[in-house]
Length: 123
Image (cartoon, rainbow, N blue to C red; front, top):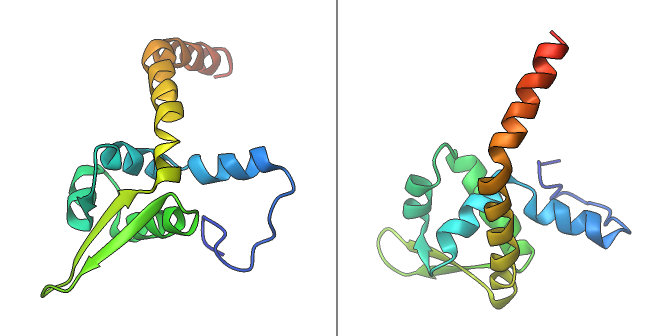
């Protein structure tokens, strides 16, 4: 089974849990930030999403496509040009992701300090 549970998965009865599964991958969030303003070629995404491997980017995009959040466009060029963009459903996640980003900007230093204090106490 892949990280995204793409083989014969059993759907969770809890919708909130399933929603978190959809958006909890760091790669999902980073891909969304790149697609927020329009279509991007696969190669552009690979270059702009720092640290993502080709395998993880492909898996992430496939899962987002499967969940109806991203649409894939293939153009008959040689080699084929592939672009991705957010669907109308995917666009509905932009604002919640912005809020999460704002929370992170506002509170990450506090989280980092708490981690350091915890690690010192438990060393």
